[in-house]
Length: 323
Image (cartoon, rainbow, N blue to C red; front, side, top):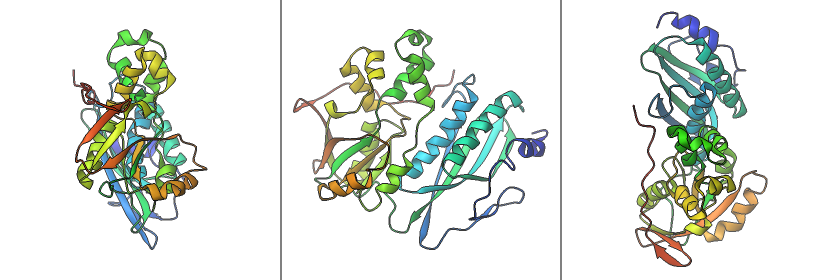
Protein backbone atom coordinates (compact mmCIF):
# COMPACT_ATOMS: atom_id res chain seq x y z
CA UNK A 1 0.00 0.00 0.00
CA UNK A 2 1.37 3.40 -0.97
CA UNK A 3 2.27 5.40 2.13
CA UNK A 4 1.95 2.34 4.37
CA UNK A 5 4.46 3.52 6.96
CA UNK A 6 3.03 7.02 6.97
CA UNK A 7 -0.46 5.54 7.49
CA UNK A 8 0.78 3.49 10.45
CA UNK A 9 2.57 6.44 12.00
CA UNK A 10 -0.43 8.73 11.52
CA UNK A 11 -3.24 6.50 12.74
CA UNK A 12 -1.81 3.71 14.89
CA UNK A 13 1.44 4.71 16.61
CA UNK A 14 1.74 6.73 19.81
CA UNK A 15 -1.96 6.78 20.65
CA UNK A 16 -1.77 4.83 23.90
CA UNK A 17 0.17 4.70 27.14
CA UNK A 18 2.46 1.69 27.11
CA UNK A 19 1.61 -1.15 29.47
CA UNK A 20 4.36 -2.25 31.82
CA UNK A 21 4.21 -5.79 30.40
CA UNK A 22 4.90 -4.57 26.85
CA UNK A 23 8.65 -4.59 26.29
CA UNK A 24 8.50 -3.62 22.61
CA UNK A 25 5.50 -2.72 20.47
CA UNK A 26 5.43 -1.18 16.99
CA UNK A 27 8.65 -0.52 15.10
CA UNK A 28 10.33 -3.92 14.95
CA UNK A 29 9.74 -7.32 13.35
CA UNK A 30 7.88 -8.62 16.41
CA UNK A 31 6.34 -7.22 19.55
CA UNK A 32 7.73 -8.38 22.88
CA UNK A 33 5.46 -8.89 25.88
CA UNK A 34 6.00 -10.46 29.26
CA UNK A 35 3.34 -12.47 31.07
CA UNK A 36 3.42 -12.35 34.88
CA UNK A 37 4.32 -15.48 36.77
CA UNK A 38 1.39 -17.80 37.43
CA UNK A 39 -0.68 -16.68 34.44
CA UNK A 40 -1.58 -18.27 31.13
CA UNK A 41 -2.12 -16.28 27.94
CA UNK A 42 -5.50 -16.59 26.22
CA UNK A 43 -5.39 -15.82 22.48
CA UNK A 44 -8.21 -15.29 19.98
CA UNK A 45 -8.19 -14.25 16.31
CA UNK A 46 -11.14 -13.09 14.20
CA UNK A 47 -11.51 -11.62 10.73
CA UNK A 48 -14.29 -9.26 9.68
CA UNK A 49 -14.86 -8.77 5.95
CA UNK A 50 -16.82 -5.99 4.28
CA UNK A 51 -19.99 -7.44 2.77
CA UNK A 52 -19.93 -10.45 5.08
CA UNK A 53 -19.71 -9.02 8.61
CA UNK A 54 -20.51 -5.37 7.92
CA UNK A 55 -21.74 -3.32 4.99
CA UNK A 56 -19.35 -1.04 3.12
CA UNK A 57 -21.38 2.05 4.06
CA UNK A 58 -21.57 1.19 7.77
CA UNK A 59 -20.49 3.75 10.35
CA UNK A 60 -16.70 3.17 10.60
CA UNK A 61 -16.73 3.86 14.34
CA UNK A 62 -19.36 1.19 14.83
CA UNK A 63 -17.34 -1.22 12.68
CA UNK A 64 -14.30 -0.60 14.88
CA UNK A 65 -16.30 -1.28 18.03
CA UNK A 66 -17.78 -4.47 16.60
CA UNK A 67 -14.40 -5.76 15.43
CA UNK A 68 -12.64 -5.25 18.75
CA UNK A 69 -15.60 -6.04 21.02
CA UNK A 70 -16.19 -9.41 19.36
CA UNK A 71 -12.60 -10.38 20.13
CA UNK A 72 -12.76 -9.07 23.69
CA UNK A 73 -15.88 -11.19 24.19
CA UNK A 74 -13.85 -14.32 23.44
CA UNK A 75 -11.54 -13.38 26.30
CA UNK A 76 -14.55 -12.81 28.59
CA UNK A 77 -15.81 -16.32 27.80
CA UNK A 78 -12.50 -17.73 29.05
CA UNK A 79 -12.39 -15.59 32.18
CA UNK A 80 -9.34 -13.75 30.83
CA UNK A 81 -8.36 -10.14 31.47
CA UNK A 82 -7.58 -8.29 28.19
CA UNK A 83 -4.00 -7.18 27.64
CA UNK A 84 -2.83 -6.82 24.03
CA UNK A 85 -4.10 -6.72 20.46
CA UNK A 86 -2.50 -6.88 17.02
CA UNK A 87 -4.40 -5.66 13.99
CA UNK A 88 -4.07 -6.35 10.26
CA UNK A 89 -5.96 -3.93 8.01
CA UNK A 90 -6.61 -4.45 4.30
CA UNK A 91 -8.07 -1.54 2.32
CA UNK A 92 -8.62 -0.86 -1.39
CA UNK A 93 -7.00 2.54 -0.88
CA UNK A 94 -6.16 4.89 1.98
CA UNK A 95 -9.40 6.53 3.05
CA UNK A 96 -8.74 9.07 5.78
CA UNK A 97 -12.43 9.94 6.20
CA UNK A 98 -13.02 6.28 7.11
CA UNK A 99 -9.82 5.72 9.10
CA UNK A 100 -10.13 8.69 11.44
CA UNK A 101 -13.45 7.74 13.09
CA UNK A 102 -12.52 4.06 12.94
CA UNK A 103 -9.30 4.61 14.87
CA UNK A 104 -10.90 7.02 17.34
CA UNK A 105 -13.46 4.40 18.34
CA UNK A 106 -10.98 1.52 18.21
CA UNK A 107 -8.55 3.16 20.64
CA UNK A 108 -11.32 4.45 22.92
CA UNK A 109 -12.61 0.89 23.38
CA UNK A 110 -9.09 -0.54 23.70
CA UNK A 111 -8.28 1.98 26.44
CA UNK A 112 -11.56 1.22 28.21
CA UNK A 113 -10.48 -2.41 28.60
CA UNK A 114 -6.77 -1.76 29.21
CA UNK A 115 -5.69 -3.21 25.87
CA UNK A 116 -2.57 -2.01 24.06
CA UNK A 117 -2.09 -2.29 20.32
CA UNK A 118 1.30 -4.00 19.92
CA UNK A 119 1.57 -4.52 16.17
CA UNK A 120 -0.06 -5.58 12.96
CA UNK A 121 0.03 -4.98 9.23
CA UNK A 122 -1.55 -2.94 6.47
CA UNK A 123 -1.99 -3.99 2.86
CA UNK A 124 -4.01 -3.20 -0.27
CA UNK A 125 -7.09 -5.25 -1.17
CA UNK A 126 -10.80 -5.69 -0.35
CA UNK A 127 -11.69 -4.11 2.99
CA UNK A 128 -11.14 -6.57 5.84
CA UNK A 129 -9.98 -6.49 9.45
CA UNK A 130 -8.10 -9.23 11.30
CA UNK A 131 -7.53 -8.86 15.02
CA UNK A 132 -5.67 -11.07 17.47
CA UNK A 133 -6.39 -10.29 21.11
CA UNK A 134 -4.50 -11.73 24.03
CA UNK A 135 -5.41 -11.76 27.68
CA UNK A 136 -4.19 -13.11 30.99
CA UNK A 137 -5.84 -15.71 33.19
CA UNK A 138 -4.49 -17.35 36.35
CA UNK A 139 -3.13 -20.78 35.53
CA UNK A 140 -5.74 -23.49 35.89
CA UNK A 141 -8.65 -21.02 36.16
CA UNK A 142 -9.61 -20.49 32.51
CA UNK A 143 -13.29 -21.07 31.76
CA UNK A 144 -13.80 -23.78 29.14
CA UNK A 145 -16.64 -25.46 27.27
CA UNK A 146 -16.05 -29.00 28.47
CA UNK A 147 -16.87 -28.87 32.18
CA UNK A 148 -20.68 -28.85 32.35
CA UNK A 149 -22.20 -31.62 34.47
CA UNK A 150 -25.70 -32.99 35.04
CA UNK A 151 -27.58 -30.73 37.45
CA UNK A 152 -25.64 -27.58 36.58
CA UNK A 153 -27.79 -24.49 36.03
CA UNK A 154 -27.61 -22.54 32.75
CA UNK A 155 -27.33 -18.76 32.77
CA UNK A 156 -27.00 -15.95 30.24
CA UNK A 157 -25.98 -12.33 30.57
CA UNK A 158 -27.88 -9.30 29.29
CA UNK A 159 -30.80 -9.60 26.90
CA UNK A 160 -30.95 -11.69 23.73
CA UNK A 161 -32.37 -11.11 20.25
CA UNK A 162 -31.58 -7.43 19.79
CA UNK A 163 -28.63 -8.11 17.50
CA UNK A 164 -30.74 -10.14 15.05
CA UNK A 165 -33.38 -7.41 14.98
CA UNK A 166 -30.67 -4.84 14.30
CA UNK A 167 -29.41 -6.98 11.44
CA UNK A 168 -32.94 -7.10 10.03
CA UNK A 169 -32.94 -3.31 9.94
CA UNK A 170 -29.54 -3.18 8.24
CA UNK A 171 -30.39 -5.72 5.55
CA UNK A 172 -33.97 -4.64 4.88
CA UNK A 173 -34.57 -0.86 4.74
CA UNK A 174 -38.33 -1.38 5.05
CA UNK A 175 -37.73 -2.34 8.69
CA UNK A 176 -36.34 1.12 9.44
CA UNK A 177 -39.85 2.37 10.10
CA UNK A 178 -40.57 -0.18 12.81
CA UNK A 179 -40.46 0.81 16.51
CA UNK A 180 -36.96 1.02 18.00
CA UNK A 181 -35.27 0.23 14.65
CA UNK A 182 -32.40 2.66 15.15
CA UNK A 183 -31.78 1.52 18.73
CA UNK A 184 -31.64 -2.13 17.70
CA UNK A 185 -29.35 -1.40 14.74
CA UNK A 186 -26.97 0.32 17.13
CA UNK A 187 -27.08 -2.62 19.53
CA UNK A 188 -26.06 -4.94 16.68
CA UNK A 189 -22.79 -3.07 16.35
CA UNK A 190 -22.16 -1.82 19.88
CA UNK A 191 -22.08 -4.83 22.20
CA UNK A 192 -20.62 -4.72 25.71
CA UNK A 193 -18.07 -7.52 26.29
CA UNK A 194 -18.71 -9.15 29.69
CA UNK A 195 -15.15 -9.15 30.98
CA UNK A 196 -16.12 -8.48 34.61
CA UNK A 197 -18.58 -11.37 34.53
CA UNK A 198 -15.98 -13.75 33.10
CA UNK A 199 -13.41 -12.74 35.70
CA UNK A 200 -15.94 -13.17 38.53
CA UNK A 201 -16.85 -16.67 37.34
CA UNK A 202 -13.34 -18.10 37.66
CA UNK A 203 -13.50 -21.10 39.96
CA UNK A 204 -17.31 -21.00 39.93
CA UNK A 205 -18.64 -21.65 36.42
CA UNK A 206 -18.22 -25.18 35.10
CA UNK A 207 -18.39 -24.10 31.44
CA UNK A 208 -18.80 -20.90 29.44
CA UNK A 209 -19.06 -19.57 25.89
CA UNK A 210 -19.86 -16.25 24.29
CA UNK A 211 -23.00 -16.01 22.17
CA UNK A 212 -21.78 -15.35 18.64
CA UNK A 213 -23.99 -17.78 16.68
CA UNK A 214 -27.16 -17.81 18.78
CA UNK A 215 -27.75 -19.32 22.22
CA UNK A 216 -29.13 -22.57 20.75
CA UNK A 217 -25.98 -23.11 18.67
CA UNK A 218 -23.52 -21.91 21.28
CA UNK A 219 -25.08 -23.81 24.18
CA UNK A 220 -24.94 -26.77 21.81
CA UNK A 221 -21.16 -26.41 21.68
CA UNK A 222 -21.01 -26.70 25.48
CA UNK A 223 -23.26 -29.75 25.41
CA UNK A 224 -21.15 -31.46 22.77
CA UNK A 225 -17.83 -30.72 24.45
CA UNK A 226 -19.18 -31.74 27.86
CA UNK A 227 -21.09 -34.81 26.60
CA UNK A 228 -24.33 -33.73 28.27
CA UNK A 229 -27.81 -32.52 27.37
CA UNK A 230 -29.95 -29.62 28.58
CA UNK A 231 -33.46 -28.30 29.03
CA UNK A 232 -34.12 -24.60 28.37
CA UNK A 233 -37.36 -22.84 29.35
CA UNK A 234 -37.91 -20.37 26.51
CA UNK A 235 -40.15 -18.21 28.71
CA UNK A 236 -37.13 -17.43 30.86
CA UNK A 237 -35.06 -16.07 27.97
CA UNK A 238 -34.31 -12.38 28.65
CA UNK A 239 -35.69 -10.15 25.89
CA UNK A 240 -35.85 -6.37 25.80
CA UNK A 241 -39.07 -4.38 25.62
CA UNK A 242 -37.67 -2.75 22.47
CA UNK A 243 -37.36 -6.13 20.76
CA UNK A 244 -40.89 -7.21 21.71
CA UNK A 245 -42.27 -3.97 20.27
CA UNK A 246 -40.16 -4.32 17.10
CA UNK A 247 -41.33 -7.87 16.29
CA UNK A 248 -44.85 -7.22 17.62
CA UNK A 249 -45.14 -10.29 19.88
CA UNK A 250 -43.35 -11.85 22.83
CA UNK A 251 -43.25 -15.29 21.16
CA UNK A 252 -41.44 -13.86 18.13
CA UNK A 253 -39.03 -12.08 20.49
CA UNK A 254 -38.29 -15.38 22.23
CA UNK A 255 -37.56 -17.02 18.88
CA UNK A 256 -35.20 -14.16 18.03
CA UNK A 257 -33.49 -14.70 21.39
CA UNK A 258 -32.77 -18.33 20.54
CA UNK A 259 -31.11 -17.71 17.18
CA UNK A 260 -29.68 -14.19 17.38
CA UNK A 261 -25.95 -14.20 16.73
CA UNK A 262 -23.23 -11.66 17.37
CA UNK A 263 -24.83 -10.84 20.72
CA UNK A 264 -21.49 -11.26 22.54
CA UNK A 265 -23.28 -12.03 25.77
CA UNK A 266 -22.11 -15.01 27.83
CA UNK A 267 -23.82 -18.37 28.31
CA UNK A 268 -22.45 -20.33 31.25
CA UNK A 269 -23.19 -23.21 33.58
CA UNK A 270 -22.84 -23.29 37.36
CA UNK A 271 -23.23 -26.22 39.78
CA UNK A 272 -26.16 -25.76 42.15
CA UNK A 273 -23.75 -25.95 45.09
CA UNK A 274 -21.98 -22.83 43.79
CA UNK A 275 -25.11 -20.78 43.09
CA UNK A 276 -24.73 -18.53 46.14
CA UNK A 277 -21.02 -18.09 45.49
CA UNK A 278 -21.89 -16.99 41.96
CA UNK A 279 -24.35 -14.34 43.12
CA UNK A 280 -21.86 -13.07 45.68
CA UNK A 281 -19.10 -12.87 43.07
CA UNK A 282 -21.39 -10.97 40.69
CA UNK A 283 -22.89 -8.65 43.30
CA UNK A 284 -20.86 -5.64 42.16
CA UNK A 285 -20.99 -6.42 38.44
CA UNK A 286 -23.40 -4.20 36.52
CA UNK A 287 -24.99 -6.87 34.34
CA UNK A 288 -28.32 -8.71 34.33
CA UNK A 289 -27.89 -12.47 34.84
CA UNK A 290 -30.76 -14.85 34.01
CA UNK A 291 -31.16 -18.57 34.68
CA UNK A 292 -32.68 -20.18 31.58
CA UNK A 293 -32.38 -23.92 32.16
CA UNK A 294 -30.48 -26.89 33.52
CA UNK A 295 -27.97 -29.45 32.30
CA UNK A 296 -29.11 -33.09 32.15
CA UNK A 297 -27.74 -36.36 30.83
CA UNK A 298 -30.06 -36.66 27.81
CA UNK A 299 -27.40 -35.79 25.27
CA UNK A 300 -29.78 -33.38 23.49
CA UNK A 301 -31.15 -29.85 23.91
CA UNK A 302 -34.86 -29.67 24.72
CA UNK A 303 -36.84 -26.43 24.57
CA UNK A 304 -39.86 -26.16 26.86
CA UNK A 305 -42.72 -23.69 27.29
CA UNK A 306 -45.27 -23.90 30.10
CA UNK A 307 -43.67 -27.17 31.15
CA UNK A 308 -44.13 -28.84 27.77
CA UNK A 309 -41.51 -29.65 25.14
CA UNK A 310 -41.86 -27.51 22.02
CA UNK A 311 -40.50 -27.73 18.50
CA UNK A 312 -40.12 -24.33 16.89
CA UNK A 313 -38.86 -24.14 13.31
CA UNK A 314 -35.82 -21.96 13.83
CA UNK A 315 -33.38 -20.86 11.16
CA UNK A 316 -29.82 -20.43 12.32
CA UNK A 317 -27.99 -17.14 12.45
CA UNK A 318 -25.98 -16.07 9.41
CA UNK A 319 -23.59 -13.20 8.73
CA UNK A 320 -24.12 -10.57 6.07
CA UNK A 321 -24.15 -12.19 2.67
CA UNK A 322 -22.10 -10.85 -0.22
CA UNK A 323 -24.04 -8.91 -2.83
